[in-house]
Image: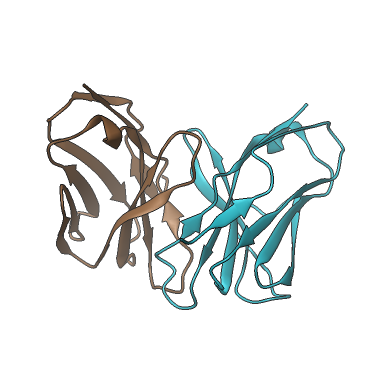
Length: 113
Length: 111
């Protein structure tokens, strides 16, 4: 069974902290994505990666960075967390080619106080 | 104007009802259309996808695309309490483009 695993279900951090959100997929997918989900705004793409060591900015990359050292692992980094980064963060992966079938993790609910 | 619009609901229906969920969009270049279902405290999962205009049926679910009106629909027949979830429409121009999501409609099916 395909699986995308996010390391934490809930996280509470302080303003200014550096935050790491980890995501691992076991499907040998080339593509990996980070979204944030906010009420009324839907899913917004933060960063994506089509290959190891490769990363591309999505629609809202400001305040975030990513790392993809291995094919199965894609990390989202908040360099200095702020309260407006309180959100649900969703990692997804897909096969090379069709982007329409995204496999999502269960999400990390991040609260920045 | 948002690229993809969706009535957020919440929508509450009795068990057995026919449910109609809808999205409108502004970019006529969209070719691939998807519906994702998201249960509470879970990530979205792909429910249906269609290419260009027309209908697609899968069990109790039917996806409909009307590109001339820039309007897509998801119909659920004989709705069940297990269909209670948030339904997200999504679309993309090509299979290599990023996917644009609607904000989702929350559905409750009451036994």
